[in-house]
Image (cartoon, rainbow over all chains, first blue to last red; front, side, top):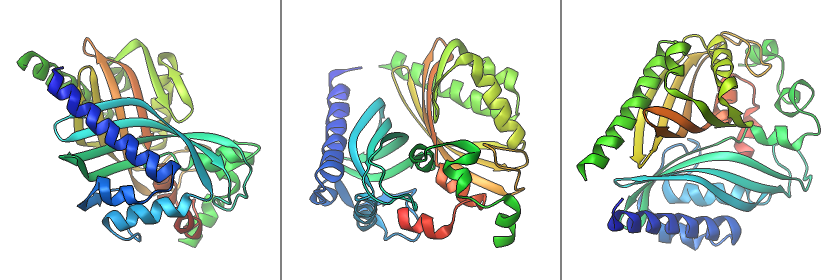
Length: 163
Length: 147
């Protein structure tokens, strides 16, 4: 690894850290326009959300009251070409109603994975997945058949009738 | 630095061969790419190598026609980051869910650490909510409220 590459990687990691700090911890959404390019595309965004940067603001605003981010842990960081990819662990406090579950005050953590494509100092594309389906499991007293998702979904027979 | 570039390409080739073994549903072939002391960091925390084979078998039993497409690989030093698209039919029990017979697609993103041609560490996260949604197990109203 040469010095120039190490510097580029460190700069990108700093940009992502600054973005997460502003948006997740300080609710400072001005970072969205600063860090994300005008043509920004979020590839795994829900189809009903506004496109581009507007959708990012919408999503961060929506979950903010229910789950208060307390820490973003970067487990591994990979950089090549225009890309930076990170495995992360997201730590939350459950401070409001989430998926029908009232605030429990519990501290939980879920896994996530982000890939960003950079153009200079800005992010132009993002792909991200998060194990959101684990959250109800973590918030319930009991897990598996008696709790978590299993207590929220209908039997497969009912599910197939419904669709 | 050609030597380094060669190493990155070799590591990406290992990941592609591992994916090919998945697509052949050949667990013995997959295990050839796992180091004996590898650690899988999945949704239930760190899983030791001894349990990974059983976990893969459970997954293949639930989704016997599983097919994985590699959408992107990013490599640096001993690491390869992957963005995969998994397609399968839910034909067997999975996570206490009886088979629904539905065809599903799911994004799977991960990172692998490769030493001497074998995976020594793997981090993986799937788009689980999207998967459960396709299985018909999440109320649409809840989904729109939390997306």
